[in-house]
Amino acid sequence: KRVVTGKIQPSFHVAPRKSRFRLLAASTARVFDLQLVWQGRVQNLTQIAADGCLFQNPLARPNVQISPAERADIVVDFSRFPAGSELYLVNRLYHLDGRKPYGYLTQPVQVLKFIVDKPLAGPDYSRVPSFLREQPTINPSEVEQTRTFVFGRSGGAWSVNDKLFENKAVAKPKLGTAEMWNLVNDSGGWAHPVHIHFEQGRVVRRNGGAPLPWERGRKDTYYLGPNERVSVFLRFRDFPGRYIMHCHNTIHEDHSMMIRYDIED
Image 1 (cartoon, rainbow, N blue to C red):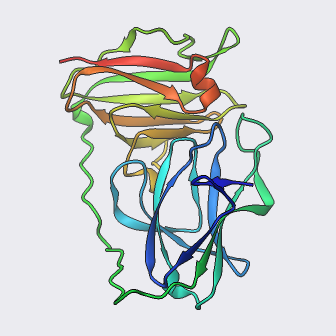
Image 2 (cartoon, rainbow, N blue to C red; image 1 turned 90 degrees about the vertical axis):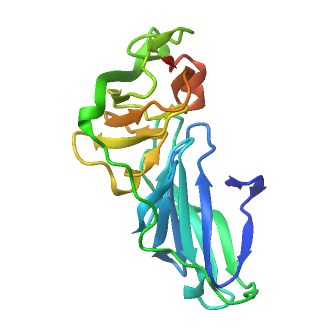
């Protein structure tokens, strides 16, 4: 069973219009792959945002995968379904333990049921514009320093660059500058959702290629599956201070997979 906003396998009554939902994976270690199903058939979702701001353009897709701390904004057009229809948001990934997803379930697990039975209160003005928000240009010439952080195991504990967490800065970017951070998971047995506090960045490369279509907006949590690497462009704006980066698998975070970085004025 799955708990959604404090209830087990809840149902939600909706009107025949477009509705926007903010999804958050608030699990300890579980990764979700969510689909919307009606009468046994998978329905397309429209994703309009991830962790940070709106995408430049909406993205139609049949599933949304989110790991601990990742977010996704989706729009479902319930006007496409007859009155009284029941739709299910389901999870199709399964875990044997806290290491990583092990594949897809033969029978996905129900997370939330939608019932299309509420009347419209007035005219339906719900829309998804084809253009949402201009994305800032990534300029490689701005990068003043490139850093690499490897998430792994050392001495029986979780580590970053073979070191356990200490309350001292391992990186000191300057306020107003840009850097490229390479996040690396060189372990074939574990997944790491990496959360960089304070600054949202842009994925430039995933595994040496282009970022996935749904991670081209601003993000602060970056999923590293086994043996994956992600390059993130970061601008350090607004405030100097002390911040952290950590794996959002709670057990890994609590057992030293964390660094402190200081933005210096």
